[in-house]
Length: 389
Image (cartoon, rainbow, N blue to C red; front, side, top):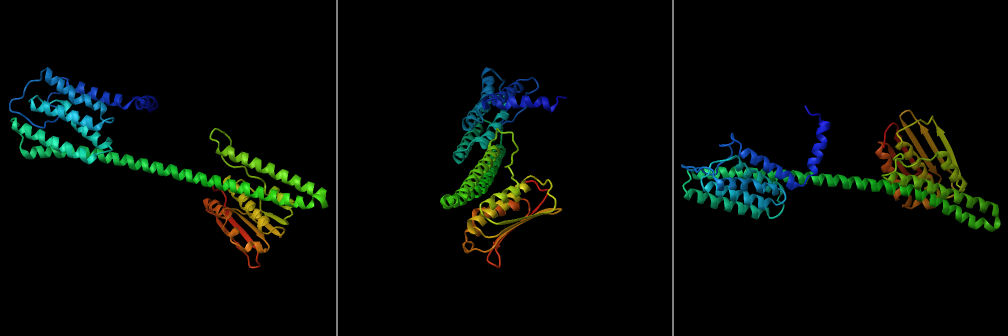
């Protein structure tokens, strides 16, 4: 018995052959069967005559003519079906004996249903007219079939055409589903890329703008503080470049690096925000432990986006960050005391918070963001651990 591993290379080679070559092999196989000593009597007859004619050179040529068109059954289904049916009609009208080559008509009609994509109604009408004309001609030549037998044979031929048509529809449905799946995957990847770019660029650019503006005000009055501010801008820019580089590695299919954006340390993130002049109270409870990779990134992005919004819309207002590492989930809360700029819809309806909700939902977590009773703003997320994203 041949092992499947040895058959696979042969199957792959077969599939790489042109369609004409593969269908030509089918036609050649049927031709050999048609002329084997045990094959007489095999096949199907459209009509029978009381005194059949022995197979001569013309009969052999007509047998070959019935099978040769099968080489183009997928390349040119209409021409194949027409040539096959014509050869069989002539073969039958000359009262030659039945051969296995006659099965070519059902193969050709199946191919007509499966591979003909245009003018299908016209082809069906044309085939029916050709069949009717041949049936009338055979009856006048003395065929012994009754009218209902011609109708029965026609129904059988139509059944093979319908089977081919059903297979064509199945292929089209499968292809449509494949395309829809690919488009959905691409849309998901675009969404992920947009979300990551937003999280990286918005946070770091906001920090750089705030520090640059502060340095501009201090450059004359307090040059040392202005210099420190510009150094922070430089450090923030380098951090942004590092995160973007990691993101590009994730997008590069030739890169063997871990297919996940880099995750920074929350303490470093808090320190960068503090260096921008934003008072941040940092608290972490529980013992951090390995999660699912994507959970770490989700926690980091929640804190990053919340702090970025605090700097943009509540600059200088006290902000508190709480991270609680529980047994089965990580809870995050970032709250900022009130500011008039937070009463607009920008914070609540921005891309960042929407992206965070989507990111947390991937892990089956809970996300909430909105104003507090004292006029502040609070972002909360609870993410189950041990879930891979």
